[in-house]
Every structure is written in structure tokens, then in C-alpha cells.
Length: 439
Image (tube, rainbow, N blue to C red; front, side, top):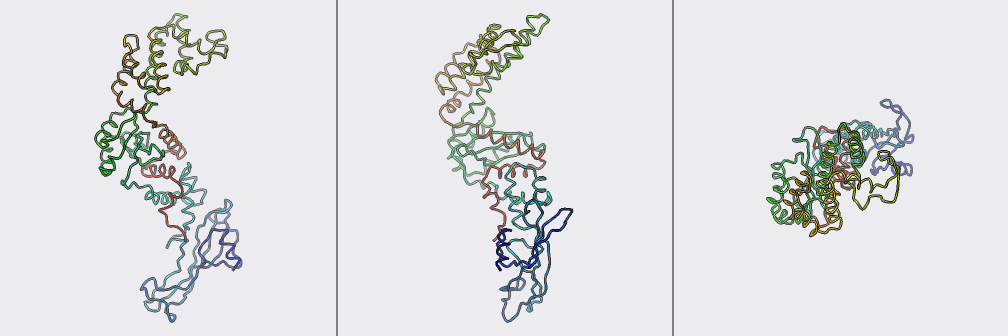
């Protein structure tokens, strides 16, 4: 018996009704792989008949031979591992039906142990492809997909509760979804994604959030969004008590894009036959990143040889030269840097005054359009400066989603993609909660 206990510990086998033979293990070639095969017997005294339910007394149920099956077990030292299990057969003398001994380690009628499925479920939370995961466990991709479908229950949205602070965003999803962009929302405090929708269209979002109780939606206090107009309408209709926070990154992105478009427009004017203009054209093309950089981060001490200037210069002098070439560019650049400064200092009053008092005649048309957009959203931008929430964590989650998609070489089925994303962000112990556990 000590031998059986040691083997059970080595295999992480909990069923004490499984007893191992004297020559309990050998190496065999199965399906082209060198494999380890354990020989064991499953037997016990049944308490009743599984067919008629009659209790076992006075030899009403007797042993009736064995049924041998090869059960796939968790791989050991990168070798496929099997248990060649002799299952005891029983005959009920009352109803004449034969039934086979069952183990909590193996589902009835299945030749893959629950331990294997649990191991697959645990590793589905990692960033790996289904094919690689199947190879590692020596099972078919169909088996892995079947486990993934079982996990769908563990990430199913019950629509009972919502956190007080939410983040909304979208990402490029599978090809067969409408618009190719899927919607994701998460808890702004814990950064854990709550659910993913196949589309970001307003009609679909309305239908989804309508499934939450009205009182639950009333408890939401803040929602972080980008400048998608559909989100503003959605929040107004379904979250009346929630304050809209425009993600700070999108505000700065709008300003930096306007400045860059101003640079490109000016650069094209220098793309002429004149040799001096062509030199300036190359400088605008080469040093575009310096214009978008925060002026506080520009290097003014480190002198390096600049090929286009044919002398050693620090970065700040390069920017100063480029700004002397056009007054509109200089005014647009100064406004961009000032707004960047007040945003970094979290000073809403000065940020707002600068937007309202900026002279449109001195600025480029791109920056004028950006300021017009910001003026329209000033009330929401105020919340950006008031609250510490942003979509930074959600953008990080989307980066991880892109990695999951790239490692798998893309997905066809949205539900499988959604399930894979959600379980990768949840605790692994919760990932396998819906699978039948071994005793």
C-alpha cells in the first residue's frame, strides 16, 4: 500500500480506489511519441445499483469482470503520460444491468482526465496559442477549444452590479464583427475588464447596458471615455448620475496631432527647387519629434554634431531655428507647450483661460479646429482635472489583447476571442471554477 500512496502523490491522484499493479509503469510508443504508461485497477464496493437504485446487500450486486481503457493524464517531464485503467464491472442481480466503476478523476465516458482539462484551463490564461497549448498537453486543438467553451460560463456577465468608476474604449477585433472594432469597458479602480462587446455601435451599447438594473446604473459616479460622440449620448441616457471624464491622453493627442499637421503643411511649402528651401524641408522632416516633445525635456547641454546643420548643436537650438521659419508655426508651438505645461500641473483654470483667450488669427487652421473641439468639451475636461482616473490602464489591457491576438495569428470566432481575453485578466483560480474538479 505504501507504493500506491507514493504513486498517487507523484501523479497528484486523489482517488484511493485506484490501485497500481506491481509492475506499475513502463515506456511505450503511442501515436508516434515515447510515452509513460501506468497500470492500475479501479475497484470498490458499490452502495447501490446505478440503474435501478437498489441498495447492495446480500450479494445483490456482484463483480463481473473488467473494462480496460487508456486515460490521458497530465504530461510528466515532457512525455505523454497515460493510465491504463482496469475499471471494475458490476452486475445487478435485481435488474440484470451491468455498470462500470466510476472515479471522480475522470468524467464518465471520457478518456481525458479532469486534471488535464484543469491544466489546459490554467494555461489558457497565459499568452499562448491554442495549437501550442494542445501540443504541450498532447491533446487535439478540438479538446482545447472544448475546454475554452466550458470556461465561457466562468466569464459570463450576470448584469447584477457595476463599479462606481468605469472606463470605456475600443480595439480592433475579429474580421466578422460589424465595423471591425469591439467595445471594452473595465473597472477604473481595479483595472479589470468587465465585458467585451463585438461592436461599438450605439444601438448595440444601448441594448447591452439596458440589461443592467436602473439602480445599478444610477450608482456609477464617473466614466472615462475618449472623444467618441456615441459615448456621450450613452452616458447621458443610461448613467444620469455619472460624470464624463475625457481621457487626458486624447486631449494631448489632439493638440500634438494639430501641431504635427501644421509642421507637415509648412514642410510641403519648402519642398521646392530652391536649394535653401530643400535644406529646411529636410530639417523639418528629420527633427519632427523635437517639435512635439515637451520643452522641459529638450536637451540644452548636450552638444552633438548635426549633419543637416553641419555643426554641433543641442536639441533646443534646433527647435528655435525651425520656429524662426514661420510665425504661425511658432504661435501654434507656444500654445501647444503652454497647454502641455498646465495639463502637467493639473491647472484647469489656466488651461481653460488659454483655450478661451487664444487668438485664432495667429494659429494654424488645424490648431483652431482642435481648440474649437476642446471648447465644446470644457465641462468634461474639467472632470479630467478633478478626478485621478484615466484610460491608461485600459490602453495597457488593449496592448495585451493585441499580443494575445498576434500570438494566436488572429481569431475567427469572437466568443472564443472574448473568453480568452477575459480569463487572461482574471485570477487563474477563478478561470477553472466552472470545470468539474477532481475529488
